[in-house]
Length: 100
Image (cartoon, rainbow, N blue to C red):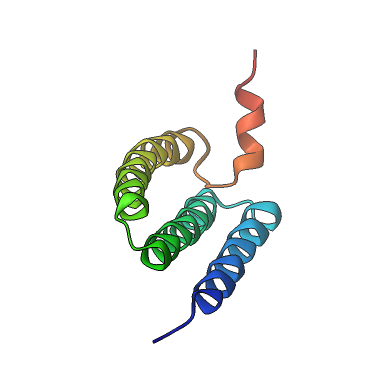
């Protein structure tokens, strides 16, 4: 039996890696991957606390978070396609030229 602290440590490490990816990268695909890492870290927390307290509320919220992540990826891929069509690159700093 694995204690809950190990799950929380794994979740914190995944969240920090995702946050580092968002703060340091310019590529839109790496942004999406970093956000997915952060959402999965939150899911690990929800499931770990659900297991610790013996109810399924955290697992239910985790399923809703997975649905949110799927919707985020669908919208993100659309944005990435528009970026690539307009600029022939996935650098998100070039999208500032689309302002009025």
